[in-house]
Amino acid sequence: MSLLVVGSVALDTVETPFGTATDALGGSATFFAAAASLFCEVQLVGVVGSDFPVRQLDFLSGRGVDLRGLEQVEGESFRWSGVYSYDLNSRETRETRLGVFADFQPRIPEAFRDAEWVFLGNIDPVLQLDVLEQVRSPRLVACDTMNYWINGKREDLLRLLSRVDLLLVNDTEARELSGDYNLFRAARWIQRHGPSMVIVKKGEHGAILFAGETIFFTPGYPLEEVFDPTGAGDAFAGGFMGYLARCGSTSTDDLRRAMVYGSALGSFAVEQFSVQRLISLDADEVHARVRSFRELTAFDHIAMVTADA
Amino acid sequence: MSLLVVGSVALDTVETPFGTATDALGGSATFFAAAASLFCEVQLVGVVGSDFPVRQLDFLSGRGVDLRGLEQVEGESFRWSGVYSYDLNSRETRETRLGVFADFQPRIPEAFRDAEWVFLGNIDPVLQLDVLEQVRSPRLVACDTMNYWINGKREDLLRLLSRVDLLLVNDTEARELSGDYNLFRAARWIQRHGPSMVIVKKGEHGAILFAGETIFFTPGYPLEEVFDPTGAGDAFAGGFMGYLARCGSTSTDDLRRAMVYGSALGSFAVEQFSVQRLISLDADEVHARVRSFRELTAFDHIAMVTADA
Image 1 (tube, each protein chain N blue to C red):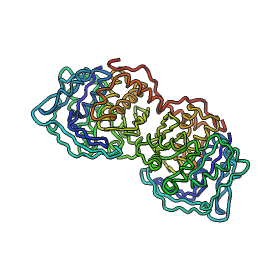
Image 2 (cartoon, rainbow over the protein chains, first blue to last red):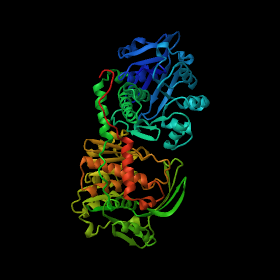
Image 3 (tube, chains in turn brown, red):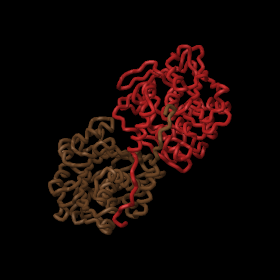
Image 4 (cartoon, each protein chain N blue to C red):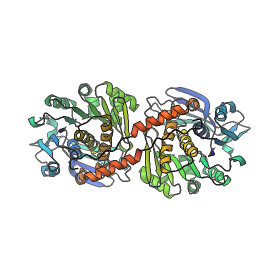
């Protein structure tokens, strides 16, 4: 049940209506591993600079995350800085300093190449393709992407899509990629271009899984305070993939449950800055939230009662 | 199980990316009754002008809608004209001609005053309050409203809220009314001001019920073509209230099911112009869609599987 993640490990400076975090742990691989490591062993591949406080990643090692694929090289670490609007629904990037991430060439350690479950975090699709050349026979490959690659490296991205099983995107990205405003047609377009599964993330409005003909929704968890939305999508992916890897299944029933575990992890991620909430999180809390998700949507379908029935 | 609706009966001219409908049946009471009459007997109170094609309402009588409360008076009928954006998520009003609706003073026929279930469509809250003076002891009163009244007649609206059991609003209205961006806090604010229940409608993103401490979500139905969104909210209200009136219950389980029936009716309403789809709709189709809604969100919650479990 080995789960490999390749992505960014970064330092985020985030300003929200609730305060500011400076040079806090961030990056897609970090959030993903923090979530997925609650479910299974995780192998992480990424790069950080000589200035990176690697001791802050000890919590990952403590949860069984194998960091042998994390290179530390001379130079500055990837830094992102952004500010969220008062409603937390939009954000503005103040600064992106790629640092050593600009020259990132994922090298998958020999010990990781038999990974069954692979998550390609949001990086250049050329690099994502390169990772696929290095792994041997993954059972399920999932990838994330963003508008920057959709517009700037469309051909490479389409080549990648033809080789992955699952694409995770947000609603705006699904629309940009497909050129179709309707999300359901957009997802079908993506499925025709490779991935048999698509997850469309809609932030506070929840997420939708398209798997073959199946469509499954999870709502946004009813949080009266969203503290910091950064990393919610990667925590979702970590919960989703971690659950599947843990149970070793891609049955429709398990995909549905994986969506709920993903949604649960995403909802925890936004409760505090950076990965703080994912660090303190334990299995009982995840349990309880999954039960809450069930309460949010479950209904017994009794016999139809209409006037002419 | 008598269900009373008071609201507008109008002629809509609607332009969507799919075409134009001119002077088509519209109005909150019309859409509500068209949906609710699939579940139970409905009593309708409204006003139309001398130009109104009343024969077009025969389909309502045929389904047991009592139209004795529909006055026809000298003058022009209420007409609304609007155009939807290409994505159908926003609309612009071209013209509103109130006609005889400007002087509407709801008169509830004696035969309707014992109604157990009451829906106050989106009209002046002063008139909505006046209706409450005329009905004797309704079991559940629900009302709709809009930004025009939230901003223009706030005090009257707050007086109304203190006397109703359920408010149905869209997300923008919930935020405007409460002054709180967070929908979950906004709903709690509304509940503190009277209604024990609030339904927040989010269009393509579904709907949320707040009933006491219970929160329940229904997703937007995955439609690859949304033909005309007009009336979806009133069809939702008709399905919701019709279901409750039909089963004579406001148990939490029935409220959950009512949300799904409401969502189903709302999803049918947008498939064609005006009330056309609600006219052709039968119980089997509603059945099937409710089952589809169940498929969209149901999951079995098996024992938690996490690395430290």
